[in-house]
Image (tube, rainbow, N blue to C red; front, side):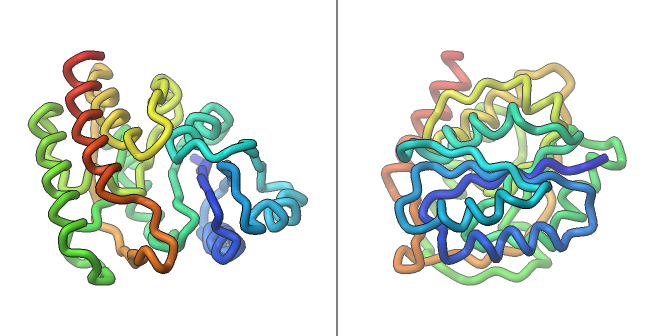
Length: 229
C-alpha cells in the first residue's frame, strides 16, 4: 500500500521545504499533495520549485479559506491506498508514519488518530490552557461519538482512501476536526485506532494559527454534526 500525504499550507515559507524533505525521507511509496491556502509570504515561490518534481502536486487557493477547505481540495486527488494529513509547520514528525499506518496495513483499522497525549513520546511543553481546552473538546466529542479518543483535534489523521473519500467536508477552518470525527463514526463498521506521536508545538510568535475562537467553534461543530447532520 502507498501513501498519499496531504499537506495543507498557509504562509509556511520558512518550513515547507523542510517538511517536504522529511516526508520524502520516509520509507514508503508515496505521493505528496500540497494545498496552498492563499499564502502571501513567499510560500508559493517555493512551491513553484518543488512542483517540478514528479512526486509532488500543488493545488493553489486564490485566497485564504482555512485548513478544512484545503483538505476538501486535497482529499479527492489522493490516488494511493492510505491518505495521511501532514501539517507543514514541523509540529508533527514524519518519523511517526510507521506507527501511524501500521494498524491500517495490518488490516485492524480504517482510521488512525495520532495522539499527543499518549505516553512514551517526546513533547514540547506549551500552553497549559490549550491542553485543557483540547481535552475538554475531546471529552465532549467522545460523549457524542462514543469513541474513547485522547486527542480528537490532533493534526495527524490517517485514513483508508475509500473511507475519507466518502466524506464531504463542510467546515473551512479547524471545525473540520470534530466534523470529520462525527461523520466517520456514522459510517457502518468503521474501525478507529489511536497511537502516540511526538509533538513540537509552536508558540504564537512562531506562527501558531489556532486560538480560543476556534475552540468555541469546535464545540458548536460537535453539537451540529452529531445531532443535526
